Length: 69
Length: 268
Image 1 (cartoon, rainbow over the protein chains, first blue to last red):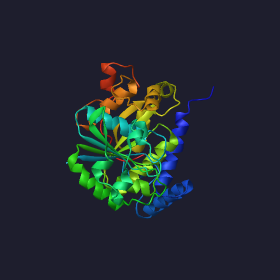
Image 2 (image 1 turned 120 degrees about the vertical axis):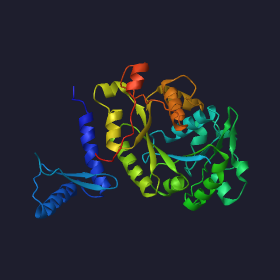
Image 3 (image 1 turned 180 degrees about the vertical axis):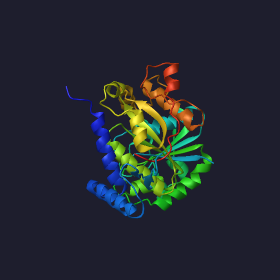
Image 4 (image 1 turned 60 degrees about the horizontal axis):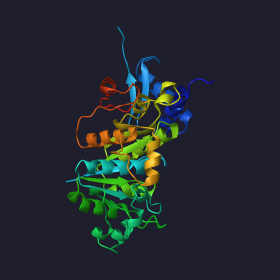
């Protein structure tokens, strides 16, 4: 018996929606994320852990969690 | 001033027409004056689902072309006196109606009804643009499948781009047994991904097929799907009805704990 298929469905769907929403190929999402990280890192000290990109139907959010205590 | 609601999905075959028919009939049974309009030019279906296919004389294209007066094209449903159908044309020419003409027609009609429901064709072509032209809000129908949810996301984006911001989700054909064993996305999974307000959930129910065979609605027939459509109608009319996501055993506690709050934001 195969493992439950929902996890696969959700993963595929999330990738599809991100590329649909910015109308580009899935690997372009990764390249965009890398470029955005690189650009921000020129002006601010950031680490990948602090840096999060979220793409919605209308916006691209860059979240920087900043200094941690 | 009546509410103008477009029922849309992007993907075909997810239950737009069945939903339009049952919500239209359900609202009319609550005493609301309802007009349902089939905007799928060339593939007329709403009349068949409603069992009114033998009563069509004029259609939407005739009204817009001025071949008849509006009143001559409206079909009154003898079973539901508050309900009218404006059928679509079975012609091939999908460009015979423009979004401007649809908007003008709907604007003229909305004062006379409590609800005008527009059954939208599948796809994102001109038929979609026609259907949404006069609408102020939408019901986006999806099933818990990757392709249907993907198309629903696309449609919500297009609706928002057209200025329609009141978009609510209807999840159709949910199979509780498959959700339980992890082989179908749950209501939570779908609403998390699409991030729009949930209007309701219709369980997969063979009674829908049986009723559609007979040209009868499921609302009022005592079936699970019928009861779910009735709750959606009451919610549309402004009643606070908790959403049953069918993930828990039936009963009052299960229904209350299945209540969903408005899902804010748009993240993945």
